[in-house]
Length: 418
Image (tube, rainbow, N blue to C red; front, side, top):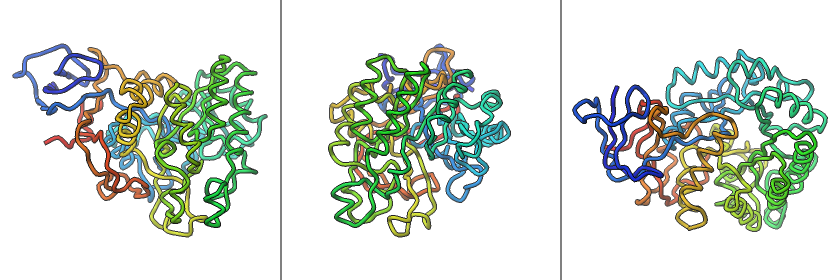
């Protein structure tokens, strides 16, 4: 199969045409040799995006999402690779579940899926999971997300054991005795009568993980950073040479806890939305390189799990189909970062941290790409999403950076171009 994409702007290139043959980027060939010629209509071609923190829900929670629907949503968002979190049913804590996820992903064919294995058996913090066997089966990291690894002793064991297999540990940082609230603890939570969750809950565990990583001289990755204190500690640790990396999500640089004033559960997530001071700190952390990656923490839920009282609603929002557009609109178009920096955050850095080898667009590289319309405003509409979840706080937002086409391994996985 040979494909030509013409009339395009290519990220970090002065060329305006792309050649694909047998699933790889190719040297030029004649147009009459192509099986398909695609007119990109002047839009921009980027390497396929990489999301290192996604909940695909399968196995066990297919009523929320399946690997097929989740990866279809990923393709619509411009992603050609996602990493699935292990809090499924059964938990992804053994090679059999890893193999099952990879089989389902291959059958769907929408996106490359890299499973993340549980750090402890059944995510219960009592016994190490089968990390070595899972690595052989295909995991790229370990994590107990969405539970933190609560004890320092177990975290030390996980860090040491995972480092033997050259894979990172991703931790949801939350000191549970302080993290029992339904939203950020502060003026808004007090005014609307919702129990709050202190920023100290996140900061205490970030500091613990940094201390352990520095003491052991092994890498640790901090999930979905949301606090000023967390950004500051990670920045200082990096300056000392600690092997710490970190991620955040679009909702932490576009929203604050004031969004919760109307008790809309689409704004309920964990970590919770913080105050403006923390939102600005996240932006500064993105700008200065303290934060390495933008991820979605894509967390689809059934409508019945969200349309309840705020304190009882499930935490989490969907994000695969809005992440690039939010990041481009609120970080690049505002002049906070460059488009090159955004691609570091949403492609190259996550690929490098997990050693995925994604993002190349040279001849012979896998033909993973996405075409984005950066020039025209569009309205994000939840009813057009491909994910099963409808739990988005961004319905009706005016954004830039709409996906026009996604290709993974030379195959179209999403197409809006006509």
